[in-house]
Amino acid sequence: MFALYQQSLQKLSHFDGIGPLLLRLYLAPVLLQAGWNKAMHFGDTVSWFEHPLELPLPGLMAALATGTEIIGAILLLLGLATRLSAIPLMVTMLVAAFIVHWQNGWLAIADPSSWLASGNEAIASSAEKLNMARDILQQYGHYDWLTSSGNFVILNNGIEFAATYFLMLLMLLFSGGGRYTSVDYWIKRRLMASNKNFAEPL
Image (cartoon, rainbow, N blue to C red; front, side, top):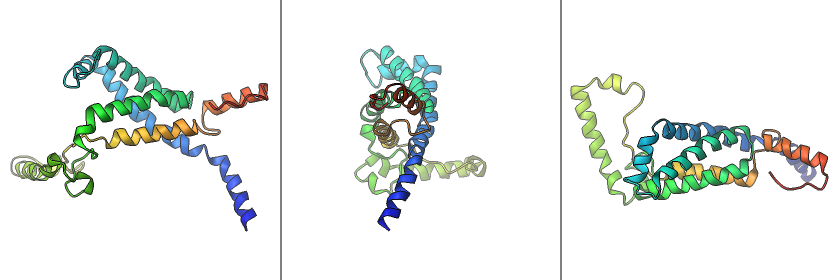
């Protein structure tokens, strides 16, 4: 029985590239969109980095963040230099989490019923604000049409997304781009074929 279990695990190992592939396919469009938005409104991005974020050298920092997200997203999509590209992207997520979102707590969307909202006064008061907004819209707006694509929420802008993306990138740092599913794998395979002593991870 144990031997059968081991054989099954061995066969499953051929599919262990699927996990990194799915992470890359999830992260790439998210990061590309974030970088593209910064690039398309670069002046506003620089102004935002300068005030209220008060980052040093806001023009340089904005350019680095934009380039990191766009180039990093493309590399992740290809699975090329996956481990290396994950590092600056992780730094970007840490900066976003601690400089932009930290003071808002964990939740990205305000949810007063969540235990993660404990002690957050902004979230606690969001229910009253949301109810008032709904009352106004129901009385003066086309509420059914306005909510036909989904319910209104109040953005809390906590670290939830930045932290989640950081952990996903950390997993890619450890795993690499994935067996069979990344350019990294095929480069490594070619190098190993030409040099049997080559054993460095990509």
